[in-house]
Image (cartoon, rainbow, N blue to C red; front, side):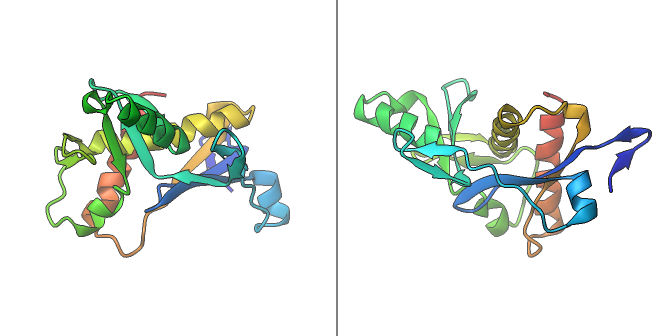
Length: 179
């Protein structure tokens, strides 16, 4: 299915930054050969003190005042809610439902910014790449497969402009250089 030079991949992992929820699914190369529809979802996103388990997590991201990742998904929701209760949210960034910003923008550039829920701006490329990285890190905690044995796929809406698709590819490339 997927080879790069002499390297053979064991897994193909699809990452989906969704409008409301995000997640991933994977298939082993061997499973794909015998049954291409045998796709695995890891049910491991926890919410509400781990009482609810889901295949997906909310598409939201929390950054600290230095724009470094604090949390993604349910963990970001909980951490930001706690900060609001303690009046400590003013030094953090909280982004949610940010994917559609690429759908509606006419001038997408690698240096464009986007505003969080309080109006503070951060570089959009960082918001997307940190979200991709959070999904990858979460997946890697679930499986015991060397990174070199994984082929990554990032889903994007077919209706997006080529520029929006290139922006997502650029976000993914930023992650490649940090793993």
